[in-house]
Image (cartoon, rainbow, N blue to C red; front, side, top):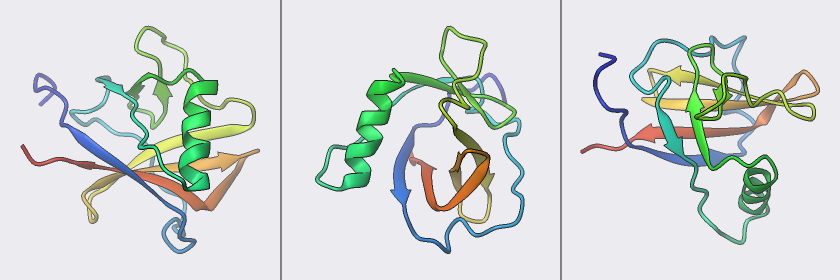
Length: 124
């Protein structure tokens, strides 16, 4: 239902090539987390990928985000999408089998099967 508050979600990232190897995915949808504002928190760490994620967050000023029904992202006060930006596009999709939101990364119009993030609902 749309009236319920958004679920708390925990994010992680993965660089396994097989994980993103799917046919054309269906992005977006009408879920309780759509059009709700979330605060971006990237866990600090020594991993180059974590460092790059933190740098990207700062460069693109991604403190708060909203997931849109078309599988995109926007700022909480903007109607315009955040991506694509500088040749990079991020799109989210629901993976019912895995019980998670998967964020796919594209660069210059090509999907990067080795690069994706996931968000999982936290149990109350």
